[in-house]
Length: 479
Image (cartoon, rainbow, N blue to C red; front, side, top):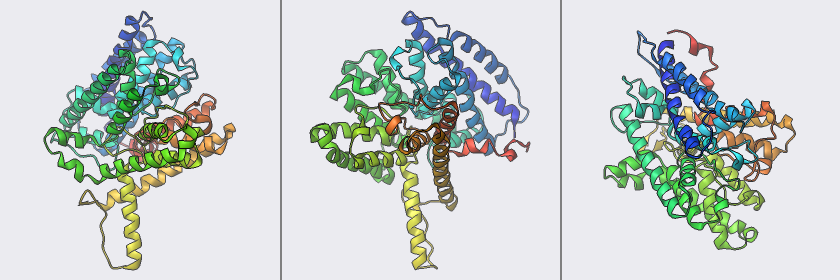
């Protein structure tokens, strides 16, 4: 393990977080609030980060295990530091609650312990929503996009942080790939902000909700979320952009370089769109009697499906009150999630495709034992190691959900609350069903349960392995 290089990169990341906190500090000054919740944190983070950054490693080589360790440690350290302003401001007095809220922000989960979100100061509200935007594409990908990093080792970091079973470079250098992804990310965020301004939102509200949409996070500065605006235009803009941010960003790069045909050949995208269409139409038909009319039901269903399959978590209505088919469909699309290489969470559509094709191949082998069939995705054979990794990931995913639900069940909530709370945190969705539905929150859980659910959010966003590897003693041995 190359400890000096890990410490240096952590120093860079802490320094970047100190710089990012200047934005909510400026918001405090603009709205006449005290910047004191942020200033001491910025100062201490800048000093600590600067000291670590000054470390000069003799060996600058990093391998996959260092990449996993750097990613997991960076997310944990950034969340622990990022929680402090909430405590200093008095908006979230409990540090456990503040860490839960911050991890929920950075991992773009959107689960909250806040009962009165509108009581937060403008600066802390901005920081809370801005963590979605930073975490959406990845905090280390952000660092690579803005800071020079020499060496191909940066690809190990991208592989460990980017969501999905496969991560490739758009261009030969990983840093340039990160910069391209962030240009697309920024452009789409700004476009949504402008469109929301046309819908009557203030600049402040438009930015906050664009941060949540881009990162597929779901934090809002309104207790009723998007439903507070009661605007079809605003709902449709956000619903469409949620769906767009759930698409693999590589496809947007192909659009930029004049290869739109790649979109129509991408099986994952076609299945993703098909799932959204099927779920929207069937949910609308099922909930029409509850909502009042099919037209209204179609409006709410499209927004809900787009919000949940992309694991954003914005809400316009309480789908907790809808019929059982719609509620079960909510759980299913929460499991599925968005496309690989997007800012969305969940299992990912590509993993579902690999699992289904793998199961089909195994059934075929029972009928023809001598046949050799490879799992194929997007016209290319998938490596056996990738198939095995996908199967292990699925097993670990279910195991974490079930064990977490078992632990938090000691708090005395019903099965639906426990199961969907664990599932929604691992899937980075935000709201679940019953007590943690769109009109509920996670405040009533014990500190132990909040710690478990906080770990679930990190497991989900970092796709289990980077966090799990931290607990393997072999990782920490020097090479």
